[in-house]
Image (cartoon, rainbow, N blue to C red):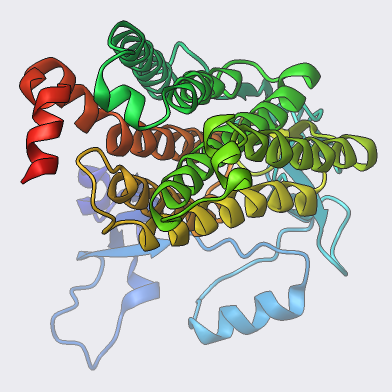
Length: 425
């Protein structure tokens, strides 16, 4: 082609032009013809042999509105432009998206919007997403529904296993302490602190430590009711027993010349009536609770994504706090009485230990309230279990561990002869 263009006798006054595509633009290499490019003012242009190169891009303006396309063409100073006769449609909306029609545009022009939370679409170009069932959740792409994981405080996870082991260990240790007291039931330290009340308190503490086992595992209607009723009753027995022990200490030391009635109260074990009366009142509160709004199973499928949280609902929150408040009244009353008797002279006076045990008991449950309300799900259940274990361990440690220390490691202090020597001094 170059040789033809250079030959002045072949195709005079005409030039062949070579063009090829380069990155989407038309790159032209040509030799100008005489008549098209002759210019007397251009000394560098040789007639019939003027070489040059230029880039000319293809411009295609598309859209549904020619007026807007025309403005854009003028703004960019496009030399040659054309409007496509047909509108260009939007790309398909894939799974996980839904079509939203563009107002005032052609039917095939639309936006793709992701499906709302917990809704899916598994087809192309749908106008409505489908809501996942209650027990299922949408994946991150909103293209499929998956079954939610059922979550509760169970024995197989570390938290549930740890709490269960703690409950078993504490209950076993309490049983050992009970065995020690039964074996040494005729020693002064056991007899001086009303051994029958000590037995009652230790047995109630065993049940207090076993009570958290009802909170661990898959909840059902029976366990939900037993959780709160057992918790309310066994703690009432434990705290009222401490109250009876405290009253016994006060009656023994405050009454210097007791009459027949007071002597009968101390000898006959009438302090046991305190336990019975306090427990009966708690039973009355529990019956009202069960009659009006008993505990039940609560299923929460919305708090945590992809999870169904199963817990026991308290039923009547007012009744729950009445039971808990009754424990608090008994504990605070016991604390005040034990505090008054803390300095009474006696070798085996346990008033100080009773004071510390009730102080710890009250501190645990006062701390429990704000922590309990700031948690949800199985963590909330774990907080209640920990509070039960901590308060029970406080009673066991403050009241019985010092006595076991004397019985097992300092037996010389647990003798009548030693007691007489200290009394004579």
